[in-house]
Amino acid sequence: LGDVRDASRLLLAFNNVDIVIHAAALKQVDTAEYNPSEFIKTNILGAQNIIEAAFYNNVSKIIALSTDKASSPINLYGATKLCSDKLFTSANHFLGQKKFSVVRYGNVLESRGSILPLFRFQAELKSHLTVTHRNMTRFIMTLEESVDLIISTLLGAKSGELWLPKLKSMKIIDLAEIFSEQYSKPIKIVGIRPGEKLHEDLISYSESMRVRVKNSIY
Image (tube, rainbow, N blue to C red; front, side, top):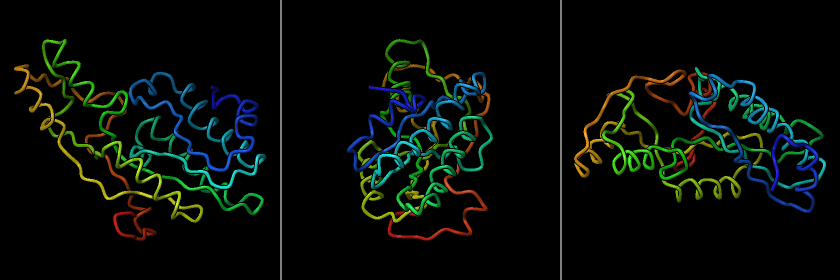
């Protein structure tokens, strides 16, 4: 039990550890817009604490989990995760230690705060379902797929790489209509939230010029 903001705690926690998977982050887009300093402390400074603790404990491999919002970010959450990505990939230049890689993916179904638990809660306890925009799309993957991707990265990544899965995207309204039909609840369009994109992308235009393809991975 600890906090990525607490560098001394990480130094202790990483003692005799071989592999670190860094998944700790503040992730709510709209919350970040109104609490930027908290997101910077956790997502950027916390990432740096992870890197330093791994160095001093000679951890053999570190995988940092990222998000599609780090690609061409327009919100603070995405910007902090892009900074985190850069910290981890550039960490391979320090002290000649080649062991840091990043995995970037989209929305994990059934994860805390994701769209499925929200629609289920609204369908069971609210008078309507909420969708921000009829054309809103998101990349989706199952929890099992996300775990498989992390394991593949651990086994296959060399260092300094950013691994991205080939993901399908879906219209959020299509998912909402399934719940609407099943629970007989209307759908209310509430408008795009601060810092929210209509469509996410996994690879920016600039990054696309340096992409290599390996099976189902970019």
